[in-house]
Image 1 (tube, rainbow, N blue to C red):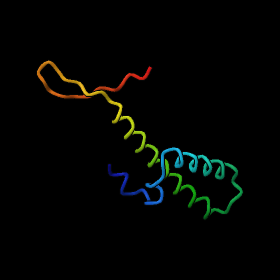
Image 2: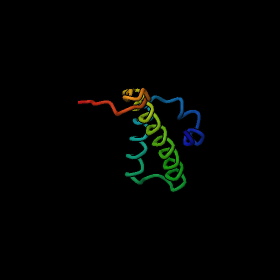
Image 3: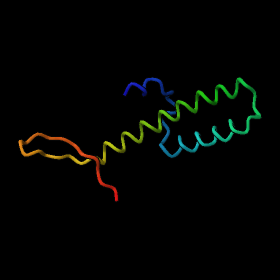
Image 4: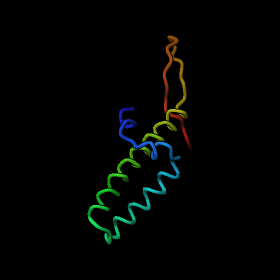
Length: 84
């Protein structure tokens, strides 16, 4: 997980839900466009790190729900879980 090296520790400690809520707040703030340019750039950079963190959390969740399969020859594999 190469992206984890670029995620600040305070963001890495956030749950998916907390990171997503902060990302949504940043997006609303940037859409308003009332702040200073430097603040907007900092917010954008933090938002990018939050997005990477959320994506990593989703990949982890997907890996946990993938089904382990055993082929006829005995080799192990995985297949996406069916969430219907």
